[in-house]
Image (cartoon, rainbow over all chains, first blue to last red; front, top):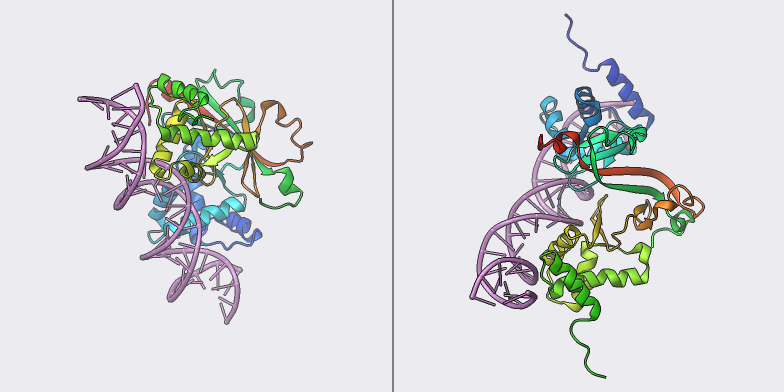
Length: 152
Length: 152
DNA sequence: CTGTCTGCAAACTTTTTGCATATAG
DNA sequence: CTATATGCAAAAAGTTTGCAGACAG
């Protein structure tokens, strides 16, 4: 068989997404993003990765990759809307699922699981989850800032 | 007037709360907790403090106080259920309001505001908040851990 | 070519830890 | 008295930054 091209069709789509947002399609960004595709294909509702995990997995394909580039790229992809972040105790968790969904964090293993809106409270207990705490964090602009007052 | 006693009536109540949980009532813990009382009296729905702010304010009364003690004490008070923590981008935010309430973080100034359950979605926009993102983080035990499988 | 992106290393911020001393009960 | 808690200082963990060179467009 002929040698596989350096860019797959999926990569081309990703490149266009980047270009559309003024970002260049570098090998690093492609590999970093592909780590999430691989994680999602293993377990779509569990594909939450820390920067360090992304670094370790991407490094297999790009041995010279640096952590700084991973942090930079993850931040850019989040700003571009291609990834989401979940903040909590410990490192940030990045998520390629950018549809509107919520998370369940296990108090024991710390892993995040996607929770569909419809699932919340309805079937959660049926599924065996023991909800100890639920916290809603709303982000946006407070009345002062929305009115243009700026930061205190 | 006679010199004020070292412990106020309120302190005695706090001391009992600590003792009830096997914690000793030290001057440091009393002062640290009192910082929240002072913050709440200034603006009850805005009394969210970072460890560093607690340290700076408590240091006025206890010049020899160390950051380690602040972090230790805050952690103990959270475990004891006397304080709550809100995790997010940046430092942890501690909160003496341990009733069931949610938070709104302003994207501009970063400050947290308490949001009563009843307020959510109902009067939020009327109050001038522009909600950009809402994220529900549920914590507890996932089916595997609840079944005793332990961490992966 | 030109400006963006990368790698490196060092700095920074937030939090934790080890150990000797102080203190609450 | 004795275990718990403190202060100090150093380290850890996670993330950000400055700068010289590499590479996408």
